[in-house]
Image (cartoon, rainbow, N blue to C red):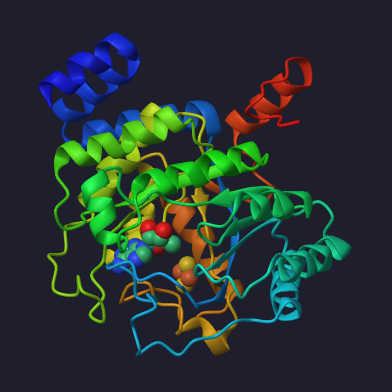
Length: 359
Ligand code: 5AD
Ligand code: FES
Protein backbone atom coordinates (compact mmCIF):
# COMPACT_ATOMS: atom_id res chain seq x y z
CA UNK A 1 0.00 0.00 0.00
CA UNK A 2 2.74 2.45 0.98
CA UNK A 3 4.46 2.08 -2.44
CA UNK A 4 1.14 2.63 -4.18
CA UNK A 5 0.64 5.86 -2.25
CA UNK A 6 4.17 7.04 -2.97
CA UNK A 7 3.60 6.51 -6.68
CA UNK A 8 0.24 8.28 -6.43
CA UNK A 9 1.86 11.24 -4.67
CA UNK A 10 3.97 11.77 -7.79
CA UNK A 11 1.11 11.53 -10.33
CA UNK A 12 -1.84 12.93 -8.35
CA UNK A 13 -0.67 14.51 -5.08
CA UNK A 14 -4.16 15.75 -4.19
CA UNK A 15 -5.58 12.22 -4.40
CA UNK A 16 -2.69 10.92 -2.29
CA UNK A 17 -3.47 13.52 0.39
CA UNK A 18 -7.16 12.58 0.38
CA UNK A 19 -6.35 8.87 0.75
CA UNK A 20 -3.97 9.67 3.65
CA UNK A 21 -6.75 11.65 5.31
CA UNK A 22 -9.21 8.78 4.76
CA UNK A 23 -6.85 6.22 6.26
CA UNK A 24 -6.06 8.37 9.27
CA UNK A 25 -9.59 9.52 10.10
CA UNK A 26 -12.34 7.88 12.11
CA UNK A 27 -15.68 7.63 10.33
CA UNK A 28 -17.31 10.67 11.93
CA UNK A 29 -14.39 12.96 10.97
CA UNK A 30 -14.37 11.58 7.43
CA UNK A 31 -18.14 11.96 7.08
CA UNK A 32 -18.05 15.55 8.36
CA UNK A 33 -15.44 16.54 5.78
CA UNK A 34 -17.26 14.77 2.92
CA UNK A 35 -20.51 16.48 3.92
CA UNK A 36 -18.77 19.87 3.93
CA UNK A 37 -17.36 19.27 0.43
CA UNK A 38 -20.72 17.97 -0.83
CA UNK A 39 -22.65 20.98 0.45
CA UNK A 40 -20.00 23.31 -1.00
CA UNK A 41 -20.64 21.99 -4.52
CA UNK A 42 -24.22 20.67 -4.45
CA UNK A 43 -25.79 22.69 -1.65
CA UNK A 44 -28.39 20.89 0.42
CA UNK A 45 -30.24 19.45 -2.60
CA UNK A 46 -30.81 15.75 -3.26
CA UNK A 47 -31.84 14.83 -6.80
CA UNK A 48 -34.68 12.35 -7.19
CA UNK A 49 -34.51 9.78 -10.03
CA UNK A 50 -37.41 7.45 -10.69
CA UNK A 51 -36.15 3.88 -11.06
CA UNK A 52 -37.90 1.46 -13.41
CA UNK A 53 -36.63 -2.12 -13.29
CA UNK A 54 -38.06 -3.31 -16.57
CA UNK A 55 -36.31 -6.59 -17.40
CA UNK A 56 -34.77 -9.28 -15.21
CA UNK A 57 -33.49 -11.51 -18.01
CA UNK A 58 -29.70 -11.67 -17.97
CA UNK A 59 -27.27 -13.56 -20.15
CA UNK A 60 -24.55 -13.42 -17.46
CA UNK A 61 -24.06 -15.35 -14.26
CA UNK A 62 -22.18 -13.00 -11.95
CA UNK A 63 -21.66 -14.89 -8.73
CA UNK A 64 -23.04 -12.08 -6.50
CA UNK A 65 -26.24 -11.33 -8.38
CA UNK A 66 -29.73 -12.66 -7.63
CA UNK A 67 -30.92 -12.42 -11.26
CA UNK A 68 -27.93 -14.32 -12.67
CA UNK A 69 -28.81 -16.57 -15.57
CA UNK A 70 -28.13 -19.73 -13.58
CA UNK A 71 -30.62 -18.86 -10.84
CA UNK A 72 -33.59 -21.04 -11.77
CA UNK A 73 -35.69 -19.66 -8.89
CA UNK A 74 -36.29 -16.32 -10.59
CA UNK A 75 -39.63 -15.63 -12.27
CA UNK A 76 -38.41 -13.84 -15.39
CA UNK A 77 -40.18 -10.80 -16.84
CA UNK A 78 -39.59 -8.34 -19.63
CA UNK A 79 -41.88 -5.29 -19.66
CA UNK A 80 -43.16 -4.18 -23.06
CA UNK A 81 -41.91 -0.75 -24.18
CA UNK A 82 -45.45 0.64 -23.78
CA UNK A 83 -45.54 -0.50 -20.11
CA UNK A 84 -42.19 1.18 -19.45
CA UNK A 85 -43.50 4.40 -21.01
CA UNK A 86 -46.67 4.30 -18.87
CA UNK A 87 -44.60 3.75 -15.72
CA UNK A 88 -42.41 6.73 -16.54
CA UNK A 89 -45.54 8.78 -17.29
CA UNK A 90 -46.76 8.20 -13.73
CA UNK A 91 -43.46 9.45 -12.37
CA UNK A 92 -43.50 12.45 -14.69
CA UNK A 93 -47.03 13.30 -13.55
CA UNK A 94 -45.77 13.16 -9.97
CA UNK A 95 -43.17 15.80 -10.87
CA UNK A 96 -40.06 13.69 -11.54
CA UNK A 97 -37.76 14.81 -14.36
CA UNK A 98 -35.17 12.05 -14.49
CA UNK A 99 -35.63 8.31 -14.85
CA UNK A 100 -33.33 5.32 -14.64
CA UNK A 101 -34.30 2.30 -16.74
CA UNK A 102 -32.51 -0.70 -15.33
CA UNK A 103 -32.42 -4.28 -16.56
CA UNK A 104 -30.24 -7.35 -16.89
CA UNK A 105 -27.88 -7.84 -19.80
CA UNK A 106 -30.54 -8.97 -22.25
CA UNK A 107 -29.81 -8.93 -25.99
CA UNK A 108 -33.51 -9.69 -26.65
CA UNK A 109 -34.27 -6.13 -25.57
CA UNK A 110 -33.37 -4.58 -28.92
CA UNK A 111 -32.31 -1.06 -29.77
CA UNK A 112 -35.62 -0.74 -31.63
CA UNK A 113 -37.47 -1.47 -28.37
CA UNK A 114 -35.43 1.17 -26.54
CA UNK A 115 -36.21 3.61 -29.35
CA UNK A 116 -39.90 2.93 -28.85
CA UNK A 117 -39.51 3.65 -25.13
CA UNK A 118 -37.53 6.84 -25.68
CA UNK A 119 -39.87 8.17 -28.37
CA UNK A 120 -42.82 7.40 -26.10
CA UNK A 121 -41.30 9.22 -23.13
CA UNK A 122 -40.22 12.27 -25.11
CA UNK A 123 -43.70 12.58 -26.66
CA UNK A 124 -45.01 13.84 -23.29
CA UNK A 125 -41.77 14.67 -21.45
CA UNK A 126 -39.34 16.28 -23.91
CA UNK A 127 -37.20 17.65 -21.08
CA UNK A 128 -36.82 14.35 -19.18
CA UNK A 129 -33.38 12.87 -18.60
CA UNK A 130 -33.40 9.16 -19.39
CA UNK A 131 -30.66 7.08 -17.86
CA UNK A 132 -29.98 3.53 -19.05
CA UNK A 133 -28.45 0.76 -16.98
CA UNK A 134 -28.49 -2.37 -19.13
CA UNK A 135 -24.96 -3.75 -19.04
CA UNK A 136 -22.32 -4.27 -21.68
CA UNK A 137 -23.52 -3.80 -25.25
CA UNK A 138 -21.76 -3.05 -28.53
CA UNK A 139 -20.32 0.36 -29.28
CA UNK A 140 -22.77 0.59 -32.14
CA UNK A 141 -25.72 -0.02 -29.77
CA UNK A 142 -24.42 2.65 -27.38
CA UNK A 143 -24.23 5.18 -30.22
CA UNK A 144 -27.75 4.30 -31.39
CA UNK A 145 -29.15 4.60 -27.85
CA UNK A 146 -27.51 7.98 -27.40
CA UNK A 147 -28.87 9.15 -30.76
CA UNK A 148 -32.32 7.95 -29.70
CA UNK A 149 -32.13 10.44 -26.82
CA UNK A 150 -30.90 8.55 -23.74
CA UNK A 151 -28.54 10.96 -22.03
CA UNK A 152 -26.83 8.99 -19.28
CA UNK A 153 -25.63 5.44 -18.75
CA UNK A 154 -24.75 3.54 -15.58
CA UNK A 155 -22.34 0.61 -15.70
CA UNK A 156 -20.61 -0.21 -12.44
CA UNK A 157 -17.16 -1.77 -12.73
CA UNK A 158 -18.11 -3.70 -9.54
CA UNK A 159 -14.51 -4.15 -8.34
CA UNK A 160 -11.29 -2.66 -9.65
CA UNK A 161 -9.28 -5.76 -8.78
CA UNK A 162 -8.71 -7.65 -12.05
CA UNK A 163 -8.43 -11.10 -10.42
CA UNK A 164 -11.52 -10.68 -8.24
CA UNK A 165 -13.43 -9.15 -11.14
CA UNK A 166 -12.81 -12.09 -13.42
CA UNK A 167 -13.71 -14.55 -10.66
CA UNK A 168 -16.98 -12.84 -9.78
CA UNK A 169 -18.10 -12.03 -13.30
CA UNK A 170 -17.96 -15.45 -14.91
CA UNK A 171 -14.57 -14.97 -16.54
CA UNK A 172 -15.22 -11.58 -18.13
CA UNK A 173 -12.16 -9.38 -17.63
CA UNK A 174 -12.19 -5.96 -16.00
CA UNK A 175 -10.63 -4.59 -19.20
CA UNK A 176 -13.86 -5.41 -21.10
CA UNK A 177 -15.89 -3.42 -18.56
CA UNK A 178 -13.50 -0.49 -18.84
CA UNK A 179 -13.67 -0.60 -22.62
CA UNK A 180 -17.47 -0.39 -22.41
CA UNK A 181 -17.12 2.69 -20.18
CA UNK A 182 -14.82 4.29 -22.77
CA UNK A 183 -17.31 3.38 -25.53
CA UNK A 184 -20.09 5.07 -23.55
CA UNK A 185 -18.06 8.22 -23.09
CA UNK A 186 -17.23 8.24 -26.77
CA UNK A 187 -20.90 7.81 -27.67
CA UNK A 188 -21.55 11.07 -25.77
CA UNK A 189 -23.18 9.76 -22.59
CA UNK A 190 -22.91 11.27 -19.16
CA UNK A 191 -21.24 8.25 -17.61
CA UNK A 192 -21.77 6.60 -14.25
CA UNK A 193 -20.02 3.65 -12.73
CA UNK A 194 -19.22 2.42 -9.25
CA UNK A 195 -18.80 -0.69 -7.20
CA UNK A 196 -19.97 -2.86 -4.36
CA UNK A 197 -18.22 -2.81 -1.00
CA UNK A 198 -17.68 -5.82 1.20
CA UNK A 199 -17.28 -8.43 -1.52
CA UNK A 200 -15.58 -11.64 -0.39
CA UNK A 201 -11.86 -11.40 -1.08
CA UNK A 202 -11.91 -7.59 -1.05
CA UNK A 203 -9.20 -5.84 0.96
CA UNK A 204 -8.87 -2.26 2.19
CA UNK A 205 -6.32 -1.75 -0.56
CA UNK A 206 -8.89 -2.82 -3.16
CA UNK A 207 -11.47 -0.47 -1.64
CA UNK A 208 -9.04 2.44 -1.98
CA UNK A 209 -8.19 1.38 -5.55
CA UNK A 210 -11.93 1.30 -6.35
CA UNK A 211 -12.34 4.91 -5.28
CA UNK A 212 -9.18 5.98 -7.14
CA UNK A 213 -10.41 4.29 -10.30
CA UNK A 214 -13.59 6.39 -10.10
CA UNK A 215 -11.39 9.49 -9.97
CA UNK A 216 -9.13 8.45 -12.83
CA UNK A 217 -12.18 7.62 -14.98
CA UNK A 218 -13.48 11.14 -14.29
CA UNK A 219 -16.97 9.78 -13.60
CA UNK A 220 -20.04 12.02 -13.59
CA UNK A 221 -21.97 9.60 -11.36
CA UNK A 222 -20.76 7.01 -8.87
CA UNK A 223 -23.00 4.34 -7.33
CA UNK A 224 -21.66 2.56 -4.26
CA UNK A 225 -23.59 -0.10 -2.42
CA UNK A 226 -22.87 -2.73 0.20
CA UNK A 227 -22.67 -6.28 -1.11
CA UNK A 228 -25.54 -8.33 0.38
CA UNK A 229 -25.21 -12.10 -0.09
CA UNK A 230 -28.12 -13.64 -2.01
CA UNK A 231 -28.94 -17.20 -0.90
CA UNK A 232 -29.52 -18.44 -4.47
CA UNK A 233 -26.02 -17.51 -5.62
CA UNK A 234 -22.56 -19.08 -5.18
CA UNK A 235 -21.75 -16.30 -2.68
CA UNK A 236 -24.88 -16.97 -0.61
CA UNK A 237 -22.95 -17.92 2.53
CA UNK A 238 -20.55 -14.99 2.45
CA UNK A 239 -19.97 -12.73 5.44
CA UNK A 240 -22.11 -9.59 5.63
CA UNK A 241 -19.84 -6.60 6.20
CA UNK A 242 -21.36 -3.71 8.19
CA UNK A 243 -22.80 -0.57 6.56
CA UNK A 244 -19.82 1.43 7.77
CA UNK A 245 -17.72 0.25 4.82
CA UNK A 246 -20.21 1.79 2.39
CA UNK A 247 -20.32 4.99 4.45
CA UNK A 248 -16.53 5.34 4.36
CA UNK A 249 -16.40 4.52 0.64
CA UNK A 250 -19.04 7.14 -0.15
CA UNK A 251 -17.17 9.78 1.84
CA UNK A 252 -13.88 8.93 0.12
CA UNK A 253 -15.41 9.13 -3.36
CA UNK A 254 -17.10 12.43 -2.49
CA UNK A 255 -13.69 13.86 -1.50
CA UNK A 256 -12.02 12.50 -4.65
CA UNK A 257 -14.86 13.57 -6.98
CA UNK A 258 -16.57 16.63 -5.49
CA UNK A 259 -18.63 17.26 -8.64
CA UNK A 260 -20.05 13.77 -9.15
CA UNK A 261 -23.64 12.80 -8.50
CA UNK A 262 -23.60 10.05 -5.88
CA UNK A 263 -26.74 8.11 -4.92
CA UNK A 264 -27.66 6.96 -1.45
CA UNK A 265 -28.34 3.47 -2.74
CA UNK A 266 -31.27 1.17 -2.07
CA UNK A 267 -28.80 -1.56 -1.07
CA UNK A 268 -27.58 0.71 1.76
CA UNK A 269 -31.20 1.23 2.87
CA UNK A 270 -31.80 -2.52 2.70
CA UNK A 271 -28.77 -3.45 4.80
CA UNK A 272 -29.46 -0.83 7.48
CA UNK A 273 -32.70 1.01 8.22
CA UNK A 274 -30.88 4.36 8.22
CA UNK A 275 -28.46 3.33 5.46
CA UNK A 276 -29.56 5.93 2.93
CA UNK A 277 -29.48 8.71 5.53
CA UNK A 278 -25.99 7.64 6.51
CA UNK A 279 -24.83 7.85 2.88
CA UNK A 280 -26.54 11.23 2.38
CA UNK A 281 -24.74 12.50 5.46
CA UNK A 282 -21.46 11.21 3.97
CA UNK A 283 -21.76 13.09 0.67
CA UNK A 284 -24.45 11.34 -1.36
CA UNK A 285 -26.80 13.72 -3.22
CA UNK A 286 -29.17 11.47 -5.19
CA UNK A 287 -32.06 9.16 -4.24
CA UNK A 288 -33.79 6.68 -6.49
CA UNK A 289 -37.38 5.82 -5.53
CA UNK A 290 -38.60 2.63 -7.12
CA UNK A 291 -41.38 3.11 -9.71
CA UNK A 292 -41.34 -0.50 -10.97
CA UNK A 293 -44.90 -1.83 -11.37
CA UNK A 294 -46.05 -3.82 -8.34
CA UNK A 295 -46.75 -6.92 -10.46
CA UNK A 296 -43.03 -7.51 -11.11
CA UNK A 297 -41.29 -5.64 -8.30
CA UNK A 298 -40.63 -8.74 -6.22
CA UNK A 299 -38.99 -10.45 -9.19
CA UNK A 300 -36.14 -7.95 -9.41
CA UNK A 301 -34.15 -9.03 -6.40
CA UNK A 302 -30.41 -8.64 -6.88
CA UNK A 303 -30.01 -9.21 -3.13
CA UNK A 304 -32.36 -10.28 -0.31
CA UNK A 305 -34.11 -7.92 2.11
CA UNK A 306 -34.71 -5.26 -0.52
CA UNK A 307 -36.82 -2.37 0.78
CA UNK A 308 -39.84 -0.70 -0.82
CA UNK A 309 -41.35 -3.87 -2.28
CA UNK A 310 -44.85 -3.09 -1.03
CA UNK A 311 -44.84 0.69 -1.33
CA UNK A 312 -45.98 2.59 -4.42
CA UNK A 313 -43.65 5.07 -6.11
CA UNK A 314 -45.67 7.86 -4.47
CA UNK A 315 -45.30 6.26 -1.01
CA UNK A 316 -41.54 6.22 -1.60
CA UNK A 317 -41.51 9.87 -2.65
CA UNK A 318 -43.21 10.92 0.57
CA UNK A 319 -40.91 8.72 2.64
CA UNK A 320 -37.78 10.07 0.94
CA UNK A 321 -38.90 13.62 1.59
CA UNK A 322 -38.91 12.87 5.31
CA UNK A 323 -35.63 10.94 5.27
CA UNK A 324 -33.88 13.74 3.41
CA UNK A 325 -35.08 16.24 6.00
CA UNK A 326 -33.52 14.09 8.73
CA UNK A 327 -30.07 14.95 7.40
CA UNK A 328 -30.90 18.62 6.75
CA UNK A 329 -31.21 18.23 3.02
CA UNK A 330 -34.12 18.80 0.62
CA UNK A 331 -35.34 16.78 -2.35
CA UNK A 332 -35.15 18.31 -5.81
CA UNK A 333 -36.86 17.00 -8.92
CA UNK A 334 -34.95 18.66 -11.77
CA UNK A 335 -32.85 16.79 -14.35
CA UNK A 336 -29.83 17.13 -12.07
CA UNK A 337 -27.02 16.86 -14.61
CA UNK A 338 -23.69 16.56 -12.82
CA UNK A 339 -21.64 19.78 -12.67
CA UNK A 340 -18.65 17.92 -14.22
CA UNK A 341 -20.79 16.94 -17.21
CA UNK A 342 -22.21 20.44 -17.62
CA UNK A 343 -18.70 21.91 -17.52
CA UNK A 344 -17.50 19.45 -20.18
CA UNK A 345 -20.43 20.38 -22.40
CA UNK A 346 -19.58 24.06 -22.01
CA UNK A 347 -15.91 23.34 -22.77
CA UNK A 348 -16.82 21.25 -25.81
CA UNK A 349 -18.53 24.25 -27.36
CA UNK A 350 -15.21 26.08 -27.45
CA UNK A 351 -12.61 23.30 -27.82
CA UNK A 352 -13.41 19.95 -29.36
CA UNK A 353 -11.80 16.98 -27.67
CA UNK A 354 -11.64 13.85 -29.85
CA UNK A 355 -12.80 11.64 -26.93
CA UNK A 356 -15.92 13.58 -26.09
CA UNK A 357 -16.85 14.67 -29.60
CA UNK A 358 -16.27 11.74 -31.94
CA UNK A 359 -16.60 12.77 -35.54
N1 5AD B 1 -25.64 -7.07 -3.25
C1 5AD B 1 -25.55 -5.73 -3.48
N2 5AD B 1 -25.54 -5.18 -4.70
C2 5AD B 1 -25.65 -6.02 -5.76
N3 5AD B 1 -25.64 -5.77 -7.08
C3 5AD B 1 -25.78 -6.94 -7.73
N4 5AD B 1 -25.86 -7.95 -6.85
C4 5AD B 1 -25.78 -7.41 -5.61
C5 5AD B 1 -25.77 -7.94 -4.29
N5 5AD B 1 -25.87 -9.25 -4.04
C6 5AD B 1 -25.40 -4.42 -7.64
C7 5AD B 1 -24.28 -4.45 -8.69
C8 5AD B 1 -24.98 -3.99 -9.95
C9 5AD B 1 -26.12 -3.17 -9.40
C10 5AD B 1 -27.25 -2.96 -10.35
O1 5AD B 1 -26.54 -3.91 -8.27
O2 5AD B 1 -23.29 -3.51 -8.31
O3 5AD B 1 -24.17 -3.22 -10.81
FE1 FES C 1 -39.62 3.47 -0.37
FE2 FES C 1 -39.17 4.55 1.99
S1 FES C 1 -38.18 4.92 0.12
S2 FES C 1 -40.78 3.24 1.43
